[in-house]
Image (tube, rainbow over all chains, first blue to last red; front, side):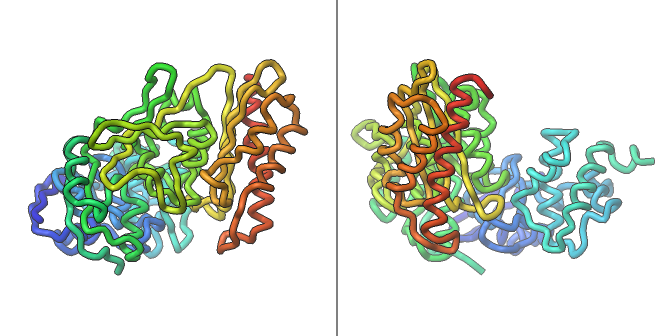
Length: 159
Length: 290
């Protein structure tokens, strides 16, 4: 069936099978490979994207369920050449090692900070509790989110 | 790569439209809400519906509100919204206790209250919470609406009284003064299904328990319910000895099975201990001590 999904502000229309998962629509149909595909069982959280403004695990959402809706992926975090403060935080605080969990972590972090600009460490850990970092780099992921919270304007504020 | 078998997709635009689509497809159709139980089962081919009827557009079923003497929870209410509702926290903190330990924050953005009940997983948390507070399920059928007590809603693992042409639209929880409620769960890791869990609601007159409700999940309690322990508590003093004895009775009457989450004796122990802990917290809340 034909679906139209607005991804990072751009409308995309495509013919898809109803059984196509949103994560594969983003990666394979649209070529947006920033969203990773991990456990396939809604446990690991590497596939987190925003659907109508809230983070969801895109391995457990059908692409057809996103028809007529808006999706935001990691490719939509930066504004042009300006990184989102969350992305800068991950760079500055060594918030990634292998990088596999990073896109999902950053999408959830951005959502958290939009709703709660000054989260406690516990609130950050709770927010990412449905996402796994198999490098076990949680300490630095938390620091990266804290950096972003402390520098809401990003690089400019950091200088 | 896990991909469901082929199916047809329909999107309902209203409750009446959903009922019409259910009538069109018959018993081979499944309703999908959050999809966080159904889609994984379809990926594993444990479920192979011919058609999925998507009810995510039914915003009219996403609400938490007071309706007379009841807390009315729409079937499309997301777990995250139940957790965020001050109205729920004011009247039935048991649901906030339970929601904090259901899956994880991202899954709670998608999963729904109605979907959790209709999936009818024998380890599901809200089923025990709704059983504890003696809620009623409101079910729309082509011919009208019927109400079924949640304590009669589940007919077995993954089976409910909702017929092929019907749709669960609301869960109504009666509000009575003088009560307190709580939920206690043991899980192997954050976001997992319960090894065992218990929900409790109590109503006090001074130091006497006038009424009690107890729900259990993951331990083979029929209808997620512990009626023998409830019966013991009615009229009992609200002492710790009463709550411990109620836990013992609840543990005695459930039928856990051994699986990867633990052996029978451990689960039975948890059923009793968690019942007592949930009762303690419910009594403390009912008497204004927390």
